Length: 162
Image 1: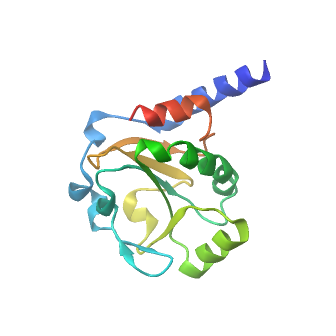
Image 2: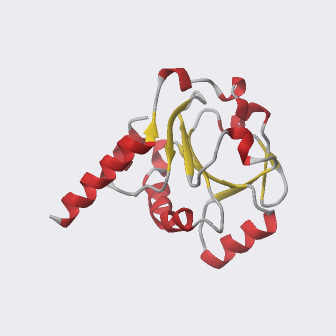
Image 3: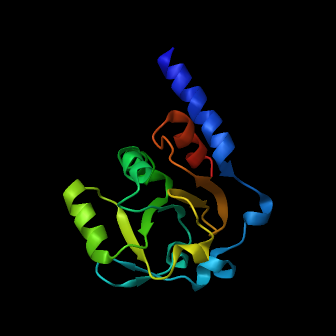
């Protein structure tokens, strides 16, 4: 019964929090993210378009964000489950590379962490965590605001179906 309630609330939460629409299917090269750059923890510049051809789960987070940190173990499990489904998980923060690197080493999370080189406001993100999911064409097909149980059967199936 407890698992059924958790599943129900997860689905209800996702229905309230996620948005998917045909008008959002703008390729990365033509979207506002095309002008945004990121750097990896070594300082190398990265663009989301570098990952075209892969499905991307792009999670905007911060070290100070409790819900962001709380969902990371489930994100890590989902990343492991979906590695054979052509997914790349990118966890992006606008905090300093040093702060992100310290967080990564203290928590042993094996994610591809990136630093946003501009303001997160330019992306229209006003709540954390916010996650965008892109298909292989580089089109944003899902936006989720708030934390999610990423390794639930329902979410894994939703991500596989993209």
